[in-house]
Length: 195
Image (cartoon, rainbow, N blue to C red; front, side, top):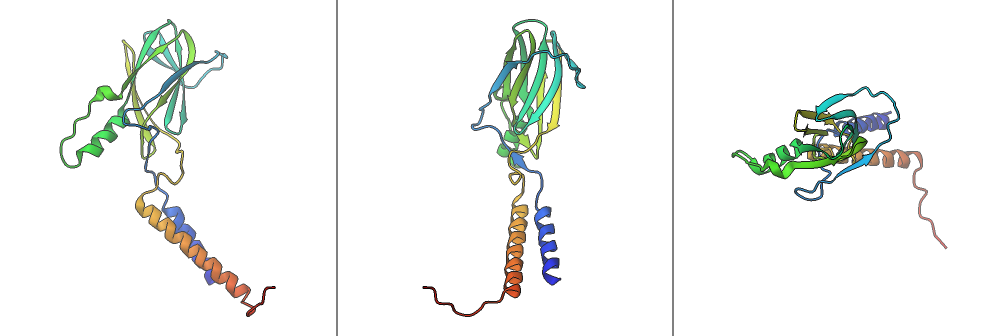
């Protein structure tokens, strides 16, 4: 009974250590890839529709670890869509700033995409902070801000150092409890000669 209580407490400590944190989908300082692929118009109605202006309609939004995927419909060929990784810029400012004023060149976080006519998927590699990402998307006529939570690639990547310590302590307590339970259930039989 005592071992079961210890195991329940250990599991509670392990689960308490999991908290949102910082993940990144970029390899370098300003590394970002944007890809646009054509999507056949299947005629399925989407729950999300937003007019971005300049003949561009946001049809749907998909969330992946470190990426926001926009499904867009452009009425004209060679339509330019601009986007900015706002969360990436804020993270860079926080990392540089400390208590002092920090300036970040926002042009380093702005990207352009040329859209073809018709429906297409645009994959945006974005920075996340505590599981959330914020981007600005604009055409020559309108600007939108999209802020959303993204799934994490690593379920343990979001934990803080305190969560890591508590998780490690919880695992150690579980292992010691398990060893004590096994030892109590099957006591050693003495010295054996192996041939």
